[in-house]
Amino acid sequence: MQKRNTVLILGIIAFAIMIIAQMIIIRGGWKQVDEMLYLRYRSLSQEANASLRGSRSMVFDTVDYLLDYYTESTVRELSQITDTQQLENKKEEIYEYFSAVLNKEQDLSQYLSDYFENQGAENEFTHRIVITNFEILGADTLVIYRDPSFRGRRSSSDSEGLAHSLKGSTSTILVNRLRIIGNYFTLNFNYYIDLTFKRSMILRELSASLGMSIFSILIVVIIFLYTYRNLMEEKRMSNLKTDFINNMTHELKTPLATITVAGKTLEMERIRTDESRILDTAKMIGKQSVHLNQLINMILEISMWERTEFQLDKKKLDIEEIMNDIVFSFRTGCGNCASLTEKYTFNGAKADIDLVYFTTLINNLLSNAVKYSEKESVINIEGEADNNNISIKIADNGIGISRSDQKHVFDKFYRASSGNIHKYKGLGLGLYYVKKIAVAHGGDVTVNSKPGKGSIFTVRIPY
Ligand code: ADP
Image 1 (cartoon, rainbow, N blue to C red):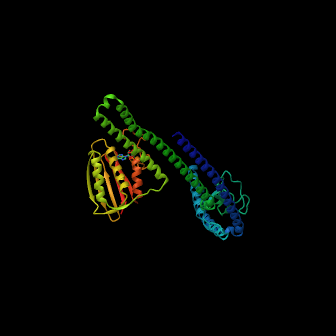
Image 2: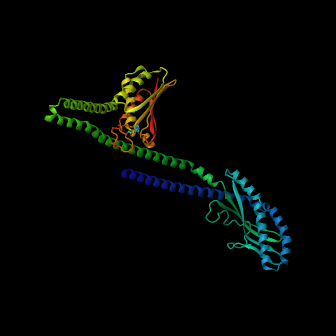
Image 3: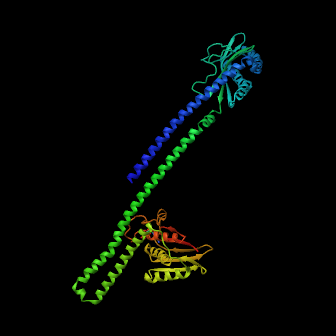
């Protein structure tokens, strides 16, 4: 358990380190591509700006006209306001109006968009206009807004410091600082573009390396899980083998102990004179020797299967007839240990069956049904044949098998819940045997069970 947890924890740590390392690499790559795109679009904006220089005044002509028209009436209104609060409100209103009109302007954006497209670059961007200085020119000059960083009246042709980004952002590029001088106002503003497509562009650029890192992480995870599963499987097998050895020792010791006691009994003088006691003891020795022999044969047989192919001696047999024989022998053999009912609709079906192995298969299922029961056992056997298969269901009212155990009961050496349950004797080989035999006949066996209610084993064999 401890080893398993250590492997798991180490695996998770290694995995986390690997993901972090990959993230650092990808982040570095992302930054690089981001910077590269920024530089490219910055220089494109600069080029566009330079080529626009001649016709720049045209670009904001409509805006110029609109704003002048608006300011003309506003100047008069402003001169009549005496209250400071009212003046502040009015200034705010004027600012909002200017900002809205400027931001609705599309001519420069259209120009840039066409320019980018001509240069083979993506032209998805949004523009943003930020006013840096705004004065109304009435009888006196009234400052409506002035950005603290505004450094005086630049001429619109001043290209110094153009086309750089807003602080800390590589998505927003300052394309131009512009100035409009109307009849009643002076306005300085910055024109920015936001590269809306940038994220998807970076992703496209990085897709190969991203794909490769996801792929390599996946491969490592798969290898880890595979190795971990194998390790667990090995551990499980080794536990099962240990349980098997314990169970087997226990199973072999019981008849041996009985034989030893019987031998000692025969040595006693008063027994030797009693013929009937000698006979009873001899019978007991014989019975236990047969049991011992069966156990050893079973173990030998199973170890032989591991090395050679399972050899069946199949014959076409009437399935209903052989089922009747097997159940009859079982019933008499176990001294009516269970109440057995049978219902067959085989319709005379004949299947290729090795009688010896098939008998063992049914006997194992029936003896388990009796063995794993805490009350008087009731066993219902149903059999039917469809077009391709015969199926035999053996249902009992025993202790049942939990869902997690159901997955393993057909495994070699597996015993439900605790591997070494001496309450019910066994080696964990009976169902393994059943499965092997069913599969060797080209069929299968399945289990359906509810703990406390009973189990149904279904054997399917093609015919
Ligand atoms: P064994 O009986 O020797 O332990 P089996 O391979 O026959 O080995 O069975 C494997 C396990 O499946 C058993 O240990 C038991 O827990 C469970 N099992 C098998 N048959 C039944 C049944 N009819 N009812 C309840 N549990 C069963």
